[in-house]
Each structure stands twice: as structure tokens, then as C-alpha cells.
Amino acid sequence: MTILAIDLGTTNSACAIWRDGDAIYIPNKLGDLLTPSVVGIDARGEVLVGRAAKERLITNPADTVAVFKRLMGTSHKVVIANRTFNAVELSSLVIKSLKEDAEAFLGCPVEQAVISVPAYFNDNQRFATKKAGELAGLRVDRLINEPTAAAMAYGLHEKKEGVFVVVDLGGGTLDVTVLEFFEGVMQVHASAGDNFLGGEDFVDAMVDAALKLAGCDRSGLSPTELHQLHIKMETAKRRISGAAQEITFTGAGQSHSISVDSDWFVRVVTPLLVRLQRPIGNALRDAGISPSEIDEVVLVGGATKMAAVRSAVAKLFRRLPACTIDPDFAVVKGGAVQAGLATKDAALEDLVLTDVCPFTLGINSLDGDKGEYLEVFSPIIERNATVPVSRVKRFYTVADNQTEIKISVYQGEHRQPSKNVFLGSMDIAVPNNRAMEESVDVRFSYDMNGILDVDVTVVSSGRKYNKVIKNSPASLSEEEFKKSLARLQKLKFHPRESEKNRALLARGERLYEMSLGENRERIGQIISGFEAVLNRQNEVDIAKAQKEFEQRLEEYDLEEWL
Ligand code: ADP
Ligand code: MG
Image 1 (cartoon, helix red, strand yellow):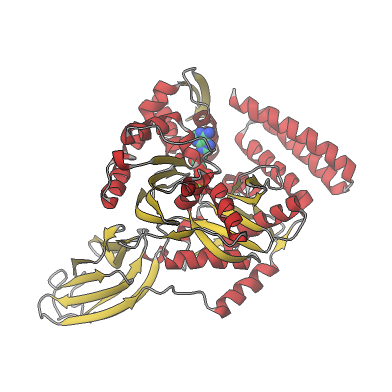
Image 2: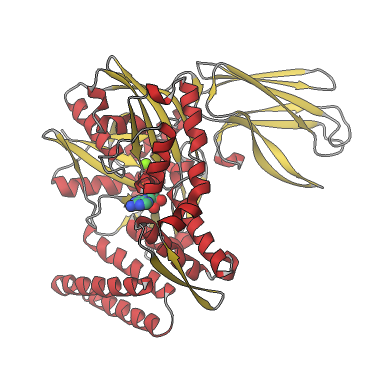
């Protein structure tokens, strides 16, 4: 029995198995160990997952979707290529693709998986993750917290006891987790983070700084020019060193050149490095520990490969973090360790923090003025508040003669209420009056058992309303599950062998869009040439053409660089 360990990331996903005392990372059909968590549908209505889809994010934005992990546990729907998907379905497509890669690599069917989730994921999000695995045809007996997995990858669970801090900086999120291992149980003591800080922000900062130096702004560049600059900065970010890299780009009808070295980089990203401080401080404070009490600091996530990030973290903890395991694979490796233990019935217990509320609770409210209002999420109890907790906030009527205030309760971190988890609603009658003259006090009390008590008091009349919300997962019903399954089964998947060709064609199309003049024409020609060979359907010819096509694209990508 093989249990597949899956790291289902916001930006990238990976899978691995445990064999002969070690984790084996599984390459995807393109030979990469990381699969971008991107899903697309091509012109033929066939599903693309991973690099081929990622290449199309700019060229075919309406047919491609990324960062849907943020939507897990919500009922938010995404439309791509005129088809509707929820986050569970999109995630299941990524998992299905990983499962197939594993089956091709191992040469046998894979039926079971351990999937990692952020420590702060709530019941709904955990449930959604399990369902995504099941939709992909896997039995998911266990989820594992990402920081716990990272700690296990370092073998920290083999020590007798200890306090560990995991700093995970991914593509778009920072998660800081304080873990304690004691008597065979890994417990999450505190988790803090920044939902909008990750490796992508470093690239954005570089792009903005370059534009500023060149005296233009984003609006002065075409989408293609901007994308091109973005790719160059992404590559430069991975190569930052004392030696300068010359980056050229076009914008506002002119060609610009800037020199990028580590001094420039640190100056540009310092505001982002500063933002590491608060979540780290909060996590330590919530857990009630000082840096000297920590046994090990572990770095996880692709963005911690940046030397500037490592040294910022080292300074904050006043010690060198552990980074001997490639931060891209720490989570999936730990998942494989857990899978290995599970086959021996010795799986580690992994407990989520119990004394903090891991998500934000609030209501919908209207933001704006002069009759133009936008519905926004208004937090009442913020993520990571120590429970039990009780907080109150006042809300006012927005219209003259308004006689009712509808209060909808949500859980989540998104500014748009609809992207959060809906928990329930109440209709509150208020006396007829002018706008802003009537108000209600909304009190949320949240306890250890996940019960949210909502008390609403109409300020002018003193009238009280109450509703108790049990935080049980608004579970996907069996019927909904079957519907999803039926829908996904109707999707077309192209044969594995052609995946590489799809990725190459998508790359060619991106290059075509990026370049101009003669280059563009030539790229167009080699794309057509390659397509013609594909149409002939002769395996030997295709293999040869594929190699040549890739080489040519390589040259053009390089040329774009210089
Ligand atoms: P997630 O957990 O969100 O799926 P990852 O851990 O895969 O994300 O991290 C992705 C981020 O890591 C991206 O922003 C990427 O640019 C960054 N990254 C990956 N490798 C490097 C590197 N060598 N140097 C700097 N940043 C990197
Ligand atoms: Mg990750």
C-alpha cells in the first residue's frame, strides 16, 4: 500500500512517497518536482494543470485560474472558459494530476493520500481539502498541518521534546507557527501570519522600483511589456548576488536598462522584510515564549531561499534558522514521513491550536457614502484572538426610513463577504428614522468549543436579539459531491504524452506575445512548424521536432533576457 504525500500549495504543489527510510519526490510529466497550482482550459475544451496552464495566465486569463487555495472552504465560484468551478473542484484537478504523475512514476495505482494544510485552516477548509482529494479518486484518511510536516521533515519529532518555530514564506502568504512536541504529540501553540506577503510581492517591488528609475509607471506599459518585465525580475530575484545583473525592458515607447545587485535588492525589499517582524512577534507573544526558549527555527517555502529573507529571520530570532532541506520540499517531505509512519500504524498525533480562534469572524456591512455603497466584510473578532473572547462593534443605518438591518455572519479573511464562509444571518428591526440616526451593537462571543454567540442590541430601543452559531462545517452534501464528480468526469483530459507539447506551445505563444518585429515573425513560424509536425502524428518526427522546438524557444527566452 502506497500513501501519497501531497503538499497542495497556493502557488506550487508537490507530491512524494516514503520508501526504504527516505522520502522520494515525484516528478511530474514534464520532469519537474514542483507543479504550479494553476488550472486552465484550452481551445479544445481540454483541462491543463501546472506549467502549461501557468504559461497561459497572461495570454488566456479568461481560461486560466491560480491562487484558488485562498478560496477553499468558501462557496465562491470561478468561471473559466465559460465553465463554473469551486475551489474544491479546482484543487481536485491539481491533485488528480499529481496522482497520475505518481502512478506513472511508480507503475501502480495510488489510492490513498496524506494532504498538508495550513495550521490555521478551519474545519470547513480542512473538510474541503479532504473532499478535493476524494474527488480526485483518493482516500484521504489524514490531513497534516504544514508546519508540523516541516518539523517532521527535520526529524524534530524524533527528539524527546522541544519548541519549534516554522517560518513559511510562500508565493503570497507568510505563516509563522509555534509548535511544541511532547510525549508523541505535536501541538500548534500559536500561528500568525500575513495573508498578503509572499515571494510575489518581492517581484512586484522590484518591478515598481525599476519603473520608478525609468520614470514611468505601470499604466505606461502594455500588459505584455509589464509581463515581460515581471518575468525578468522573477528570474533576477532568484539570482541576486553581489555581481550586478543588467536588466533591459521597454516601456512608454522607450528602452530602459537597470542594474540589479544585492544592495539594490535589499534597499527595494526592505519594507517587505520589515513586515516579517510583526507576525513573528505576535506568534511568540501568543505562545508566551521568548526567542531563547526555541529549540529550532525552520525555514519553509520557496521565498525563504532569498538570502535577504534568511538574514532578516536570523536577526529577529537571534540565531541561524535550519535550512538544510530545500524549502520547496520541506512540507511534502514531512508529509511523506507521516505517510511512512501511517503504514506502520505509528502516525504522529498532530493537534491544532485550541486556545486561539484561527480565523476572523465578522459581518457584512456597507462601506462608502452619498448613496454609493459597497458590501464589505467587517471583522469583529480577529484571527488569532485568544479564546474565550467577546467583542462588540457598532453599526449604523445607511438610508432614511430604513426599518431593518440584515446581519450576515461570516468567517474568513477576505474583504468581500462572499469570498468568506457564510455562517448565518439575522434580520433586526430598527425604528423608522433618518440615515445614521439608528444603530445596533453587534457582540460576538466565541468559546473553546467553536460556538459563536451573536448578540445584537438596537441602541435606541434597547431591544435584544440573539443567535447561536455552531461552527460545524457547512459540509458539501453527498448530493453536491456526486454532482461535482459527474461534472468533473465530463471534462476532457488530453493524453499524458501530449502534455509536454502543450507546455511548449504555451511557452511559444507567450514568447510570441512578448516579442516584436522579426523575432515575433520567426517565433510565429517555428510555432506553426511545430504544430504541423504534431498534426502529422508521427511519434518519431514529433520527438525530434519537440527537441528542436524547445531549443529554439530556449534561445528566444535567453535573447529576451539580454
Ligand atoms: P506556496 O507555498 O505558496 O505554494 P512556494 O513555497 O512554492 O509557495 O513559494 C513560491 C515562491 O517562492 C514564489 O514567489 C517564487 O518566486 C519563490 N521562489 C522560489 N524559488 C526561489 C529562489 N530560488 N529565490 C527566490 N525566490 C524563490
Ligand atoms: Mg507552501
